[in-house]
Length: 130
Image 1 (cartoon, rainbow, N blue to C red):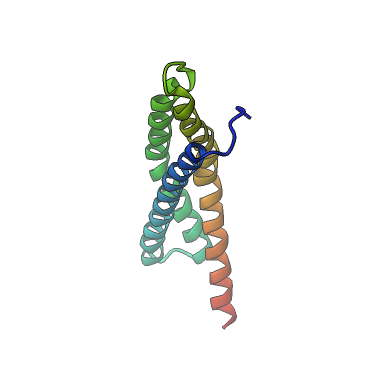
Image 2 (cartoon, rainbow, N blue to C red):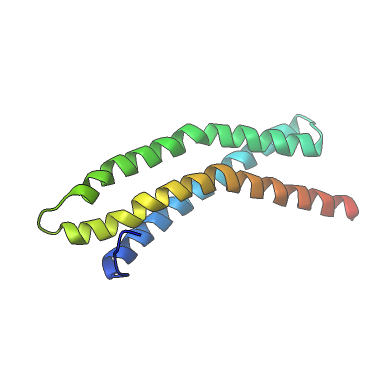
């Protein structure tokens, strides 16, 4: 969208974005898993326990994820407006990171908890069939 060719600089930006996205995604899975252990230890029903664990874990990670996104975007946004020496390379690195942080936020805060709940529900159904 910004007119950059896929150069080494753009790929460096994508690699940095993937690193941030994977790290926050893994942490997003760890928190519901810990919450799930607490809810099942409390004797809650399986479906309600999974739902409560996913909501609790996602809420715990909301502020840190939004802070990460805000810091990354605020720190890289000035690079996109710069026009000095070397700015063409830096813009090519910053553009995929800034754009990807928006989609990464949606993915990590909405899709990862939903997929976690779906997978836990399927595992629960498999256990009940056996």
